Length: 129
View 1 (cartoon, rainbow, N blue to C red):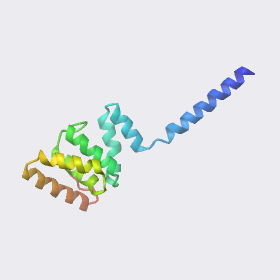
View 2: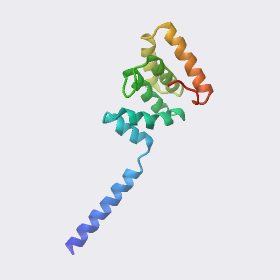
View 3: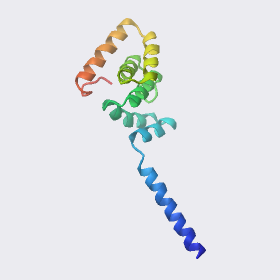
View 4: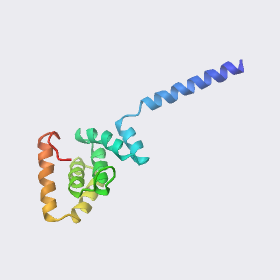
């Protein structure tokens, strides 16, 4: 009898844990990958979210481009993603945008603004990232 209760409890626990694991979405999976240092899978998960207007994902992509995590370090692309996140009201992205802007040349800032406008105008279909 005790063994049946124990087995029943283990089955119930496995089902609960399985359901919790299945409930994770792209954001959670992306953060898990990012936090373990698996940057390329994280980018693959964050990019579609960012393209759909998710400010948190846009901010993370900006940070990844700024630091060179899973991509070549690129202030112009960092600026693009930070500016998108800032436009969606992300306070951290606004601060990051100010910081990255201070490290860029006037030419890089101009290029970043042009790329951001073209990217947004095409609904992210013709982005250079």
